[in-house]
Figure 1 (cartoon, rainbow, N blue to C red):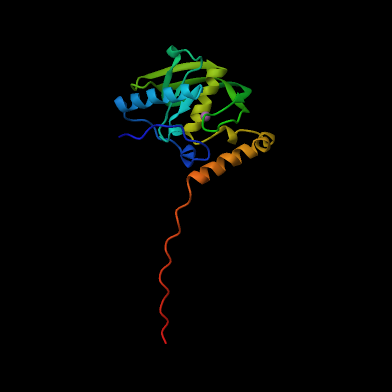
Figure 2 (cartoon, helix red, strand yellow):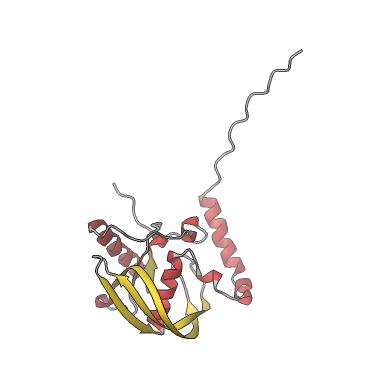
Length: 187
Ligand code: NI
């Protein structure tokens, strides 16, 4: 039975890895994308990146409007032609209960492939460009907590510590190796 896909949480180390480009476009990738869109919707998110389900590949899903026809699967994304900057509040499905202002580029061009490997290009301003940047950050192991200011860090310290404690409790370190028997002393 395949392992059930679920969203992983800060400070899981898989959220910190650099993800690898997707090379195999096939039914497995399409199925992963469908499952991720489901998880995103259940979590009431606007985007979900593959590392957030423990897969370190350069793929994310998003839906900026909530309408089913606006589901997008974005593979091997590249951003270019930045213009302007804008700060707005963001949350992240892997860091529950934390919302923070993040400064992002306002307008960007995206070059990527769809779930079948077909290349496409799009330009966006504002919210959609923000989602692209948030999700591509995930593909590079970056989280919104890395982009928040010192004050916000202090304000959220307790919540982050709670998440760290929860993770530590669920992932106890392995027991130390047994000690070798004491060496017999020669008389
Ligand atoms: Ni996120």
